[in-house]
Image (tube, rainbow, N blue to C red):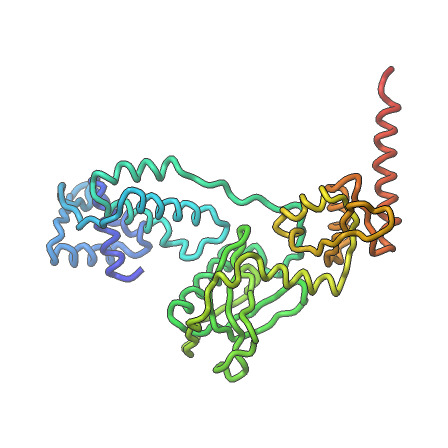
Length: 354
């Protein structure tokens, strides 16, 4: 935070009406007490009525009745912003995390007095659940994945470069490729999906002046091992819109590649297919009429999956009516698993007292 932003933050913090010590302000703004004293002197010099109280419980206090010019938000506008901040606070990785709390405090403190009580109440009454884990779609983990501090740093640096119109150099590791890649990237945008952040941009060629990709590509932020902002410029094309990357377009393209590499076919009822079409992941599978004699309205779903256990978990979830068609070599293993499940139920039934 620069000196101007910190000075504004001190005024907003003191607006609460209580006496605050220099050490408390230093902790709050992550600077030394000496820096706080210099900030207070600068504020006093420009006319801010800040008074020092000596003694054991001494500190600084803002003159009662002093206020900043109100920001002309309506109640609905201010509430919308607070809801957005509350939603951001529930994300696992929060870009500009250090500014999140001060942004909410400044928003409330800078409002006209008659809105402050209402908005403070809204902050206490509006919340969001954390996004739950997804048990049906297991995925490989990359080295360092789950390091929230590193992920926040990757998102923040990418956004800073994006707003400055500059390139970034990043090191990326995908567990599906099994190797690290160093790349120069022109940032175009970011989006969140199911508690993950995706960085959107285009790779730059070796001289880092022209793009090497035909179209924008994605990097998952939690798989970025290192990232630095570059001095070279990388302006965003005026025709780019982040909406082009939404609707999980990336997932549909990826699943087409996975189907070609490791196809899995499951025959199921039309009702089961309709349920899977509502799923964020399996909804991007390929669904076709079964076409087999006597199959009726059954549907053939084809996905790409090399993890046999993941496919077996899906078959168990679907239940009767779903049949694994290929890979053929997996069918015997799943049939043995089903027989084992049946045997456990038969044993439980026979052991019940008459």
